[in-house]
Length: 198
Image 1 (cartoon, rainbow, N blue to C red):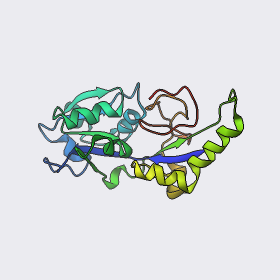
Image 2: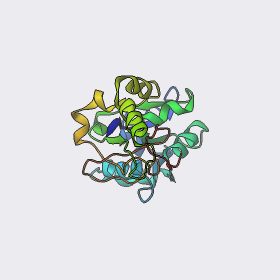
Image 3: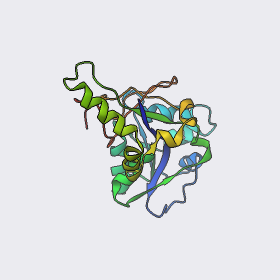
Image 4: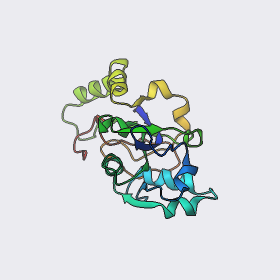
């Protein structure tokens, strides 16, 4: 069941000291960039797609200082001053207590990843699990997701239907994504299934 939508943004330090406005600014000399490892995390795959056809791709990649295994690693390095900018999910930025801000250029608006929940086939209390899942997808659940920086699916549809998919509930927060729609949880996302990695 689709619950929320993640959107890629460029995370920068609060106040945006280098005046990063879009992907082209990541190619500027001296800008220290963090990207997700496309072999490990969905946001890394999205970043690769965003850069694939750009003429300045080589210049951006030359500035990459970190290929992170999760989005929080990129955010932490920006907050600590080790990086200037990085491609992360929009919902990751609020996790850093005002130390980061998000730049959302129009050129990145077409990429989205759906966060979904599911009841496990092995669930012992299926009724309770289904009720919890229904709550996550309800307006009350959506209000909680909004408070943590997520865009509820009910607010995003039908645009979310054409977005970037991920791997499904219960998987690693940065599971790899593909082009066809399927759900993807992210760091800090409430989950309906047990056994997820935080």
